[in-house]
Length: 442
Ligand SMILES: [Zn+2]
Image (cartoon, rainbow, N blue to C red; front, side, top):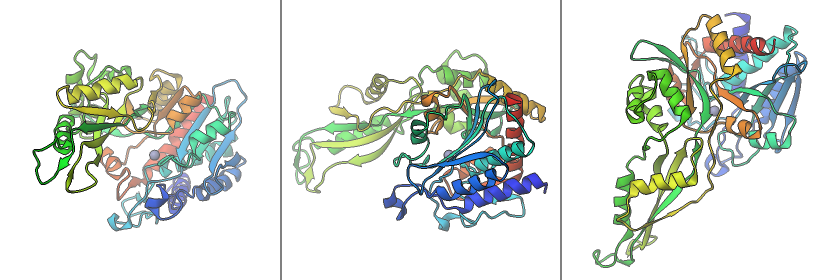
């Protein structure tokens, strides 16, 4: 094991051992997060190499780490970004305890956060340490921003709050989570994903409207529950009707060439790799997965109203009117229902895939002997890159290279049991980030 691999492995294991499970206190049975532990650990680690570090906290137990190597000011600034919290883990489902950071004989590091995303935070911190030790003087500021509260966000102590509280933290370019999966395609090519944007959300409640009645005579009145059942059948699993999106088209073009028929392109692209089979159809437009049901409060009362909430995930640029049209197109006009909007629209956003950062990433990969083509994708879920773009960082991508951890292992472990990463990918990521900083800021 090289010294640099030993170092990044030690940092990653230390981060995993802090249990930073983040979910509502009612679910966890204790206060969420506790990210100050790993934030303080990184503060001490990086300060040791002369990097300017500070803990910025709205809640003392939930600090964000902000570290910086100041630039001379004649290049754009670059931020290495990550979050320190994780989703909860039930140890009963795991081969190794989720917060023990076990390394097995095959070179796998096991633990909650091994891929989402204490691996990347460790690699980015060690890359910064390595640059500082080498006396690197960047032309633009180099930041490391490791935040609390990404996985839940309701406490608002992480990235959104940090950027509002600290208008001085405005990197021009950011590299965060969400990409780097290596996909050998059915046609023989190899691509690796880079996330250029995230979908947003706009949940809708579909309320079936009937007439109340006594449950002893089911055909009197108009029980709203069977009516809701019919509406639910029309929603099905909530997969989208394909809609126009330049970001999705850019992805499809890398996979298949120019897009003529979007629906068949989505279908063909999904067939190129098992990991794409679920993400690509979901990226076609507004998904509307049915989740929360409500009917009668009393068994002997057939309700006049029954409802389902659809967890709608929307492409960047989608308006409330677009969502309403997509939902009504599914539900038809012959049954009686109303729509309610329990939460405001949270827009998705995306960065251009044609930027200096994309070019630099590509050059660094080629120079390291990696010729897999970059595949610009949207995340089906949310990341802090949305807040970065909102606050004025035009280019925020999700990328960290994985060569030894297959895409299937990454996908299976994400927010699931037996999350693990191959240790060689920790070193690969350190070397990638060192080279990227030198390429852009050197
Ligand atoms: Zn994450």
